[in-house]
Length: 166
Image (tube, rainbow, N blue to C red; front, side):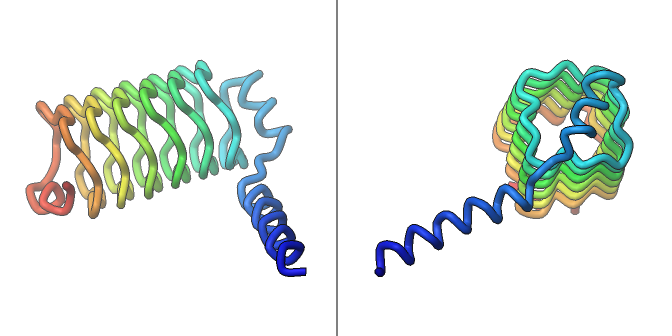
């Protein structure tokens, strides 16, 4: 009975986690066909190596999405939710992420050259070895953000904001 209870709990945990991050297939198809998906639900979507150059994703929900090695150069992601998304080695050159929620996101080794992250929430974000050359972090929340070995050459950032990061 105890084993059955444990198995049931594990099963329910998996089901609930899938429900929490269950993207809409129609939204995914719309994005892949048009490169536009404003305020759509792509939470938990697998966009591994996706070519989303200049995509319009204003206010989109990409929470928990897999964007490992994705090309998001020039993408508009303002007000998007990217919490807990995996963007390791993603290309976000010239991307606009104004007001985006990037809480606990994995941006290790990502390229954010000249990206705009004004007023973005990067709390707890992983940016180890990220390229942040010329990035605009004005008003961004960097509390508990990890910036080990990241390149911040010519970045626009307030000292008190930088002091919040590791």
